Length: 495
Ligand code: SF4
Image (cartoon, rainbow, N blue to C red; front, side, top):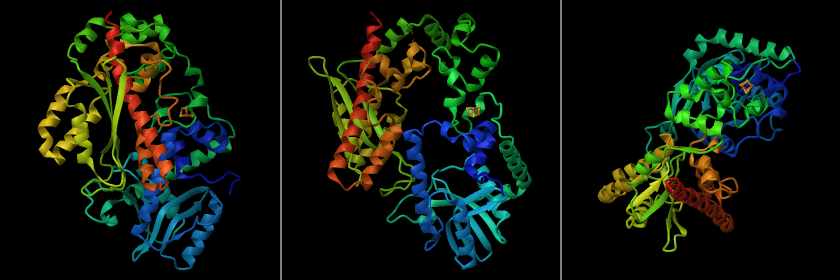
């Protein structure tokens, strides 16, 4: 065995994406970009669901228990001991073959032989899931005498919770054995390629490209992309595919200043280029005026946050079903000062009806309801309409009054160079309200808000609960207030 640590499935997937990514991951890990809060939370959810799935095959032995973290040779040794001792269910079963490492979530000895189960906290099976399962199959096939199958366990999209969760219905089993058998030689070849890359002891000379984002955004963007962090980089253009941007890049147009805006067909792209070249905001006054004409007073703005638990908590819900839990409403008072109010649903009980009633009551007196990207708000209202048909007229009335300010930005009626191709409300916040952005908040994204809300399930301390509630409200209020300020900001452009 080489002095290198064995190649895990995560490292292997990196090699599939880009051999430079793989090499840096194995040999220059310290260069890795800091893990975002969102990614950390997604990983944690994956681990939690994996542990939960162990209940499908209870009473197993966890070979990582009581050992030093990441001591994979010790885990592999314990796995072999467990097999020799007749253990029939092994969690985190670890195998090392030809410097390749596989750690499967659950390994079970059935009558026909061993079956490995890899748990994914997802409703769908992606190509990458299949690839990493096939890699593990390759290692297991060479490590176990009687491997009978390898299955992915994903969340069953059709499962509806009635009473206690039926774990065997909650997860859906899909065998990848056929794919894995068909591709054994591919994995053998790719594993050798990865190993020879490490043996060369030099960072592969690979240029940036669309592969930096597929299947996942690379962990070393800070290293390879540091020259593209200039404001003028063409990668600061939005609404253009990575493919198109790289075509420009490779044709020598690496800077927005090099682009001939007059030759651009798309008006929204032309506006972005001109705004950066002139270092000034650009807008279509007429189009904005026409759009804003539909806004009636009194008006308010709304932001809704949803929680999508992998493990359904409430009766009649499915895995990852969107549960609205918080809304903020911002509106000017008589003096014109923006005031915010909110409704935050307790997590322990469903109470979606109370949420809906609070939302309808809070907005009843407003002629226009401003939002930024109505997709989620409409999804929530449509679902509430199905669940609580007695409110359908009020829901329809609510939907009729929605005015989506995202349209102004999405259609290219306004652009500021500071947006750097980011058309989200977070991208606009520093322009609309300098100094009152999201960067100082404990929660800075809807995904973090969702996981922070979920944390309320495990918090027993009242002080902590209050702190979490305050963070959630602060974030949601900020979204609603920036939306309202965006309206005033756009109106001010009309002179
Ligand atoms: S940023 Fe792109 S080129 Fe650099 S290592 Fe990652 S995938 Fe490879």
